[in-house]
Image (cartoon, rainbow, N blue to C red; front, side, top):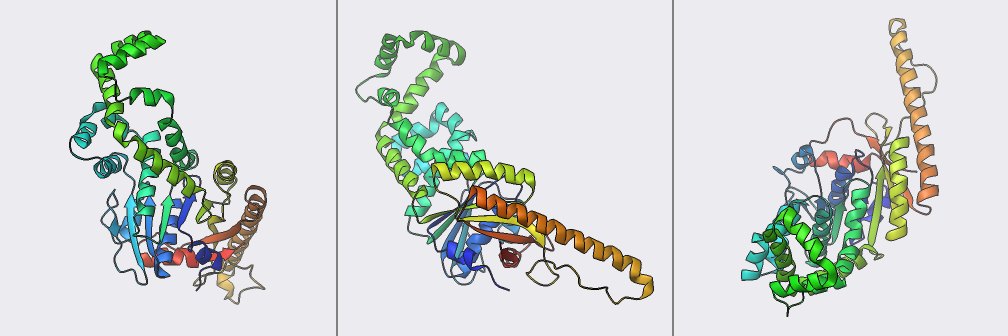
Length: 369
């Protein structure tokens, strides 16, 4: 069995970003791609967002969390895996970029603790920071980034540029102005017409929380330049020709509708998909990697088994028909959303993922569209 050349060519890149709707096997696909890169002799990392427990089991790991873990018994190169945990990843980031009292002040700040635990924009920002860390640390030839489903994926990909813009806004520079004391900051805000807003915020959240909000911005003052630099570098990386985007979908109409929106936005804001991968797109011939073919002629079976054989032939023909219909939808989708992109269909596996060998098999049961 062999992996389509389109996949091996893709894995020569520096960064591969997997995007797509939910429920299409995107996380598993990202892990399989990283494993294949390791088999080819590369130092690979898969950075995922919400892996199923069975994926960790298949990788030979007790679980996946923010720590980078080495996947055992991978020959050729090496494979590491980690999961983005918003709070743990943010705390690790602060530990890397701040020291001593500044670090403690951030970690103890209630505004920071609330911000770092949310799963909305803060998740996107820390993903961007983590991506910078692993792509510039020199430990990996390839990073495969698994993103959340559809619109959340766009948030992560947009986060570096939005963070850079936010850090450059006059309002943030006002908060971070070193020469102002806390009292001076409140007085200036009131002078700018913000007294009513501050009063309302103080009544709703308490003056202590408002003070901690200002303190949160001030304590990050000396880190602002570093955050902005990393955000700009990561934003450029996501548009670099060395980065490839893999749009993972199924051939069902609902999945294709979601993938259509994502593919269009991706091309507009970053780069067109280099590869469109349709997961579980066909049933393979038993024991082989190629799709089922329609049977030729009748099966030579005893007369008593002919009714069963007839049902099996009908089932096989239905599967072939569904496959051809799905392949047609997939080809039209690529022509419309990602013209020029390569397209690969993956077959359904005979069992759930249980081992690293099952992940290998996932890419081997593939055909080029």
